[in-house]
Amino acid sequence: MIKQQIEKWIIRMTRSMNLRSKIVMFYGLIVFIPTVLLAAGAGYMMLHTVRANYMLTIREAVRQSAQSIEFRKQSYDLLATRTATDGELISRLARDYLDIDEQLGTVNYVDRSFLLTSKYLPGIENFRIYHTNDTLVQDGGLLWKPEERMLSGMLEKDWYAQMLRTPDNLVWKNAADDKTKLVVSHKILNAYGDVYGIVYLLLDYNGVFMESFDHPFEGAGELYIVDDSQRIIASSEPTQIGSKLASSSLGKYWNNSEEPAGNQDGTVLITQEIKSGWTVAALVHLDRLEEQSTRIMYYIALGIAFFLLLSIFLIMIVLKNVIWRIRKLGVRMTDISEGYFEATVRNRDNDELGELEILFNSMSGRLRKLVEEHTEAVLKEREQSFRALQAQINPHFIYNSLSLIRWRAMDQQDELQIRTIDALTTFYRLALSNRVNVTLIRDEIEHLKAYIEIQQLRYPGQVSVEWQVEPEVLDLYGIKLMLQPTVENCYLHGGITTRPHAFIQITIKRAGDRVQFQIFDNGKGISGEKLEQIRAGSYTGTRNGFGMNNIRERLALYFGAEGSFEIESVEDEWTSVTIEIPICTDSPEIKKGDGI
Image: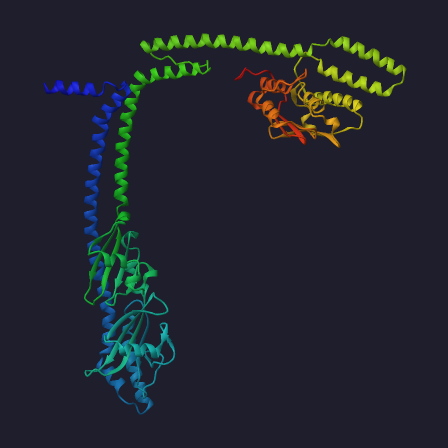
């Protein structure tokens, strides 16, 4: 009973869903979501266990580092204390000397007793015994007197006076001039507390602590030594040595957390006090330590993701075989509705969908054939209309008439008339050649020059024509009657002959992989409204002949989207027409493209 109710509830909830959504939903509920939850839980437990193990390891490492540091410190403390508490040394520093032999005996005793001892410990750069006995010399070896010389960044007298004021007998400090040097000082005093001198040891930081502070925790943390006055005297970060704890990068963790402390930025602070009052502090970046564990988790996650993707891939194969093929049929039908009649569907299976695919391919093939036949008829109709325009005048009749007129002009020796007739002959010879509708650019230029010659004879001295033609474009192909109608508009519509200082500039050049034709005139220009109509192709004009729409249509017919026709104008100032076509070393053919 419960099973039937569950089945009815599932059917009712998924009734409005398509088949693809149902399969994806059940896959997610049964496979994807349980796998992701299981992987997330296992990853969390693994990370928690690894972090606990790391904490144990870190604590043990800090403890061992503290023991090593304490042992090293005790070695230098022992040297300073043994020297400062040596009874014979105190006796010799306290006495008054009467002759040089007694002083020499003290110097020899000091060298014999302490010079070799100081060589046993590493990192000791300087070892001195300062005294204020006026009857005892300073030998420049171990015995010194506090004077005006510099000592670790301060005057010897100042350092000596500062040590006398210090309540502690043994003091560790960083050198004032170099934080990587450590100064160990110990007062030399008798049983009654009288001070007879001070032991001075200058230690090289690297020689004393570098073994413990060199790349701690494999670069995933920093190690510090903080003395009882809250000053960092040693650190794996050289810039922190000698600074106050409060102003260091360790201060915010020291003051805000209990030991051991965990912080939001993934760091852990662990401290360990040693007997001398120092504190060894380790600031460990758990996120860096856990990089290896994180990489392992990433590998596991990638493995899970791979198998999930594999299962998705298998599901998609089923969907492709059942649903995707139906959708593909719908997409191909949409293509046909938008005019793409090359759409076909690959047939692979002999099932019900396979039969639909066969019928669809047959339908698209027949539609494609019908459209091609219709397109070919339209192309032929347009081609014939262009040829009809050229054939409106009988070429032979015109040539015979011009020849007769030329002979009569020669009889009358009328040179101006002969030039006019020659220009007309050249013009009509190129214009009325209706065998082809493409021509070399040099022939198109010759045709244009013939037309301009006629206009110059008609309007002598009124219009200046400037030619800028690159020689390398002359043997490329273009379409006929592309330039002459444009220049004709300068005379017919631009009123160029009525303008003062009238000129026409004709530029033909190569621009990258295209040929650019530009005709500029300083005629009366075009009004804004008419210019917009010309650009939109809705302006029909008021005269017979080839208009701009005709040129634009023929550019599209032969070059498709690669041919462009642009017109710019400022009313009562100038007009510029720019035509661009692709470079054609061979005669272009009519294209079957969009809009045909």
